[in-house]
Amino acid sequence: MLINPQISQAAGFGINSTRLIYPEGANSITATLRNRGDANVYLVQSSVSRLSASTQAAPFDVTPPLFRMEAESKHQVRIRFRGAELPTDRESVFYFRTTAIPASLSKEDDESQRLIKGDTRFGVGKSIKLFYRPKNLADDALSAQRNLKIEANGSGLIISNPSPYYVSFLDIRVAGKRLSLDDAEEKMLPPFGSHTWPVRNAKGKVEWVSIDDHGGYHAFSQTLP
Image 1 (cartoon, rainbow, N blue to C red):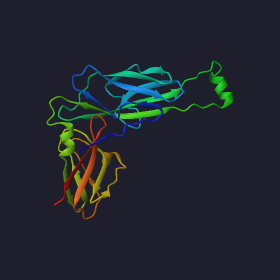
Image 2: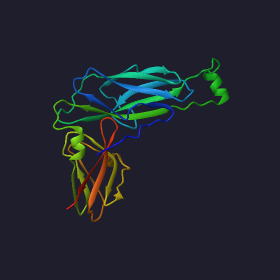
Image 3: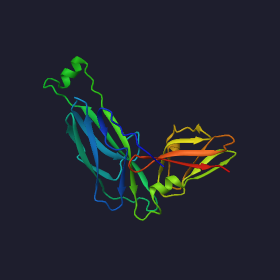
Image 4: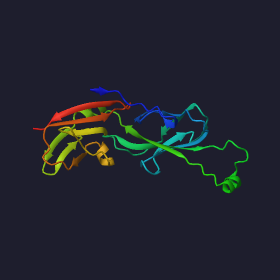
């Protein structure tokens, strides 16, 4: 079951997608950045990292890495995989990161003037997942979201991902009760990985909503025996 995605229409600086897929063998992919409904002109820096919260070198180049973005405009950056030894039997996850700092519009707004005036300009940071997808993986990403293995034991509710794809969750419920998705390990199951939620006496219907390659939402369910 497909649920319409909640496309972000917020004003200001942002990325026009929720995730990126880099197929093995592609020369490059593009990401579109936008500055909508915001009078600010930004200096934008983009990169790909191995971590979501901080920069760690990843085998991708972003062109241009730094550019000026006018108000009410869009800009495409090109992401190119420069080669590395990555697993060929499963996806790898990276993070496309951008930082936008309001550019000075005043000729007098040099460093000394900012110090005198106490002017501080804060940057806007955005980060989305970038999945490197090897060729010839079994099945497809949507099948992976549908065919999770769910069981309950004395430790709690165990959800396993027997596929080579990452599975990202928007919502999980057991007998109508929502489970925690506060941690990264709860929000996204890695290929051939699993996570246990400490649910006592888990019974009945397990429902989950997952996120596809395009940011769309899909709802699935299984009933525990």
